[in-house]
Image (cartoon, rainbow, N blue to C red; front, side, top):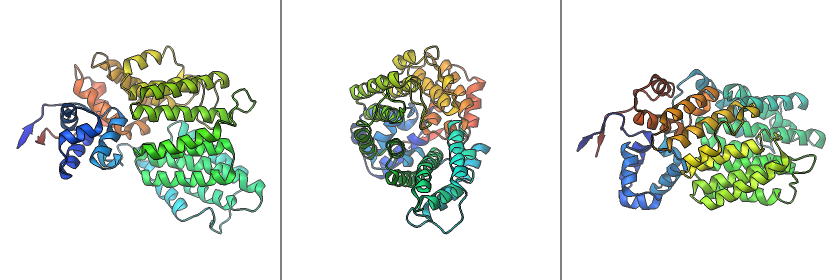
Length: 421
């Protein structure tokens, strides 16, 4: 029997897919609700579109409950909704060829540019990524990966070791690009190559960066046990060598980033106490290191508070998290990173949306600021898309800003006003 859903309450892609997969598997709503840790009424509201999936942990819990992947629910990768996303998609074939057709032990017999030139190229790619310039970061990245692998196979350590370090950074960029655009298998392949190169080099900071990227790749597909294993291994490796008072604080920075990652994992699993403990450990390190950026991860007091905001939103503690990370308290502009700025405003929007509708206008404003800073990342983020539709549904008035956001996300015209019971 067909039922009419009120305007603005159509199931989103995640809700529709969740219901279809649950029914195809023959699972009752009661069983899936229990397995995913929500009430049966909440599950019904999520499937029908009365509520949106604005917490990534909830998407992961539901995917595990019905026995599918996270991307089975999110529908990634999405069709490109802007030129920048289309240009980013165009860099993936080169990355894929470099990873699938070349091995560290068997590089192609090709000429490679001098290491100094390749190292500068790799650093520029990292800088582009930090500014949400994904297409520029990935431009001819496959060529860079291939030539670095040629040098990484050299017998001379003076050439091999710098090549391995640059290869780790380049794989980190490649994995971030592929994962952002929704090609998670390619992102995992890049992450695996990153780990292999870092292991051969054996330098703690580089290996810590690789394990951070590897854990994040597993987080992106909802594989928490694998992410937790990578994170715990990194913490054990970094703890003995991290000295926040040393001249080189790189190991301490990476240790702090892994404590933040552990907090994120705990929040997704709804272990609030563990999440807060990890945040406190990261804060203690950040107070001693100050603002740093050894591995282009911007570790320091500001980044800890940005992650605390994100963790608070993941835990459903948005109002408290917002008050702690209010723009008057956190100077995100000091990081000079559009990527971090975009994520910050997105998490502010998530936190404000948890006030229950009372501060939706502010949430929309911060979502708009997030899109201005990091449009490619935001428009391809499943939770950002869900949040945009949630705010549209709840808007007291249909303001032009919300309509414009929906258009730029490519969401207008995709929804149906009829669902099957």
